[in-house]
Length: 238
Image (cartoon, rainbow, N blue to C red):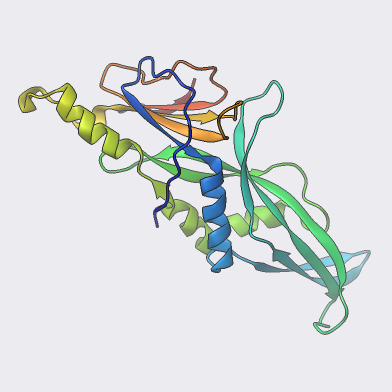
């Protein structure tokens, strides 16, 4: 599936070597992922088995609609993550009607915004990059990894994309190169994804900028995290 709702945010950005760019608030993706949870596309309940001090227990993890945010550690590159909260219910093995011991769910995972192959140019997608910190016991990092490795959730991430560069390149390619015989292929344009932490008059957001072949499409701003995709070379951090 593709994201269907966009929210425009102020862009405190100089395009520099890019021809054009689009920014979207991180909160838009947060709302979207929360909605996927509410309609059951993302798991709301996970069943686990645990042995604690030699005694087996059944563990039920009830996950609230998650929140997606931009984390900006001091002195480190910014990154995006998904916050998982809810309730952990612990019962003796094989006693589903027993009163549970209830614990809070407190976990976070790195859910990165990345450029993924599109037709004809790259699109923005989501990639699971592991647990961010240590989850609250009895849930482990391995449990979280297993949840995100499940075929159902992996399919959601694989199929969630936003085509921001495509419309930009389609319009700019024709205006930049009016002679069809000398017009480059859309796939030859450079696409850049930049995370943009909030400033006084902006929200946390991400920007996609594009430039014709031979340009970097890198905007002139204090870059905290960026992925550049060059035609034929794949992606690399700059």
